Picture 1 (cartoon, rainbow, N blue to C red):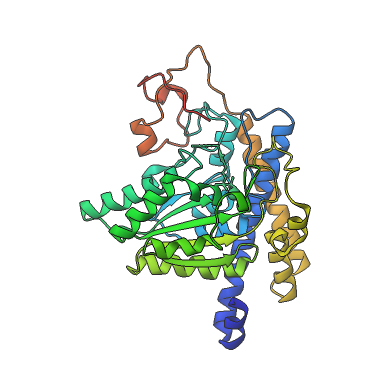
Picture 2 (cartoon, helix red, strand yellow):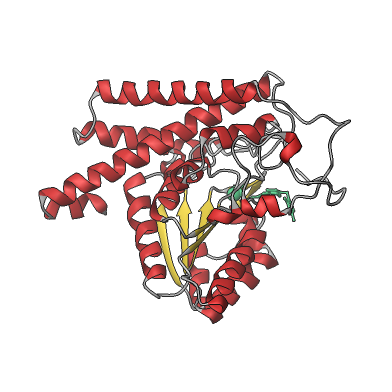
Length: 361
Ligand SMILES: Cc1ncc(C[n+]2csc(CCOP(=O)(O)OP(=O)(O)O)c2C)c(N)n1
Ligand SMILES: [Mg+2]
């Protein structure tokens, strides 16, 4: 679809399309390299808890992160490494949570992905299964009540989450309140080992949009150009007062649910189908075919991603982990969590004990 737009319009449109696809590709690549590093650290026993990858979902995720602006709200999930980076997360922030650095937002007690900067509208996830949609709604409503600029709120979920009450309640509320919510569903065919055919009976999840009075769009999540075009349009619609947008991308999860899962239940036929295409490879082929990147540029971008990831991980591996004898076990929702952790904060500067709850992984 974007191809034909580029074909019929002028050179500036083509050049900005090239720039967007190159930028998206580089976020996708950086996220893939970071994910691969986390997977290898996990296999080496250096990461405790789970490691969850976004393999095959980077195009969709990058498109969401790139379509948002500072001041917007973003609630990414476990497969949204690309979107997190594009929205402004640093590699060090990502590495600190997974590697249990005491300088991370969870002070090293969360070997997982519950990280974020709420002050900047970047929300740490509570649960994978739809809980974040109403948190985004709440932030958008709060801004409306306070008369502040609302911005757009994007929430990412999987198709499994669309079967939960949380999804239906939140989408209904967004429709009634005409919130600038962009709800992005990655229909990656599986919720853990449950295939989509056991998850919903409608032809496409996008058909649910009409039931809630919101705008729906469906797209091929393996094609980065389509992701940029459709997600970008949904974000612009929401920003312009067009109400909530439900975006459903079809793709295939190209990994296990987490690195502990060998994904042996995934249908080999699906892997061979169009859905099983690797969006990173598709994007790279597009850059080559259209003459938008040389082999030297592609190699340089990969080399730079590897170097940056290695640097970030090496530096975080030198940071301290929590000392159980000194730990104050403060709760997750501290003023500092809300207002932000200074990058150089030491353990001693962290808030005093506010409870004994250890966040669930
Ligand atoms: C209330 C609740 N039930 C179960 C789980 C365990 N769980 C985490 S993710 C997941 C599957 C999610 O599938 P989907 O929404 O399709 O997202 P995907 O993993 O495919 O990205 C399950 C069952 C959970 N976190 N919370
Ligand atoms: Mg799924």
